Image 1 (cartoon, one colour):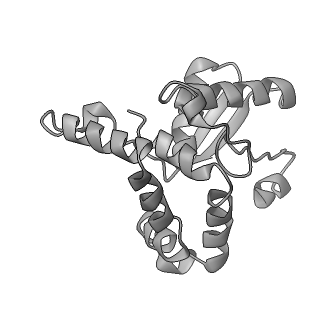
Image 2 (cartoon, rainbow, N blue to C red):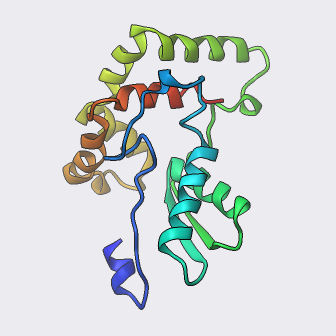
Length: 176
């Protein structure tokens, strides 16, 4: 963000989507399955931010991972607020029903349910939310292992260890 802000007369903002980073993490069990943590909720969050903070002209959204889908949804919902969208390592949501073989859909749905609703999900999250596991995952996303520094791993991992992060993660991975 800093190089973008310093490269011209631009303002640069970083948004933590609801449930991610250091933002609030309302318990998804207080809502219907996937009612809170979804692309529409996050797109609404982005629209509200643009309306309140970036008032003068349409913004260029630079989006990473799940944020890519959010940025695209925001641009579709409110094209008057979005001049462009830059996507970095966008999550293509391979768990979407349309991406699954028809015979696999019931099994994937059952796995998502078990992960969200049982202790197995928290055990799975505790295995994924480690420095080494995250380093391996990022190694697949980054062009070079050299780019996966301990600093990057810590920046991504620490918010994921906040109270409520496991519930958000497990609710979101059941989003279809």
